[in-house]
Length: 186
Image (cartoon, rainbow, N blue to C red):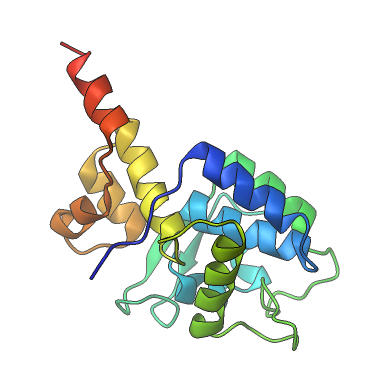
């Protein structure tokens, strides 16, 4: 099975600019940012609640725990939010939202299904002309970008919720620019 396309910074900017033109611009932008900054699967994004990312005192959390019902492997894991994503969520999550509300409400007001979340990503990427991009593109890009910054594969596996580093290594994309830069290190 062909892997999802990883996106570079210019392509991510294109996606974010396209999200700004959509009917649910703030929601779609936040969904894409969660995908690229947390490396979550579509199922995990769809299952998020306001209480996962916002504490009782209204602050956006530095970290939260996905419970086993939210993850693919049925294993809990801690997710860490960087400052950029926390800023985005601070402006996205309404102060009046309840902890049990879906973080990303569908047009019908409830949680997205995993399949509908996948379809949303496919539609957005298709509108941007990004062939081969899917709901897994943010996850693969997250892992690849961190690997390119020298993050140890064991840390990457923990962040991704993978049970082995071999699985994580399959997510790391290699392109000609990286190969060229690598030989310049000699």
